[in-house]
Length: 197
Image 1: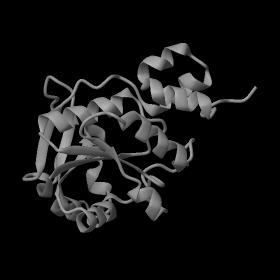
Image 2 (image 1 turned 120 degrees about the horizontal axis):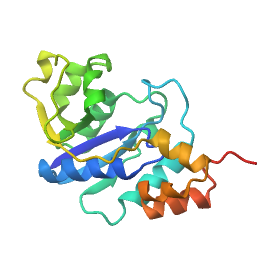
Image 3 (image 1 turned 90 degrees about the vertical axis):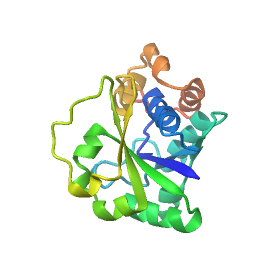
């Protein structure tokens, strides 16, 4: 079994997250890519704008019916700061498989600051997502990544969760193009990301 792990805050999940998951799944011929929402991201000081229950539910709605995509609550169930090394250790115990940790080029650049990055590379290969044509990596890569790194080209939409939240707060109708329709409906139903009048 070949499984990709795509971690993050997903606050909210958007079409960019989906494009990355599907590109990595297809190009690396993975059986599944699993979205793993963080309970609390140690690389970001702020709390998530939507609670973990909502972020998890939005991911499940987005992944539903899409082949080879899944969602895990492993970090939310564990609670506290979410460290990928602990997540991969736990996953290997409960579901032994060949794992790929999916990272964007910005996360790859800061990877050496993660908790036990060398140990992470013993549990998983790293799928580094870059925009085509192949971006030039202008930063040095640590030696321990050399033999575990796979490059994946992906035309990701130029969108971020921060921008999506801002559009939702302004009630900008153009936001619907950046969200799965079912995620947008969930956000509206639960009145998430609103600045109340």
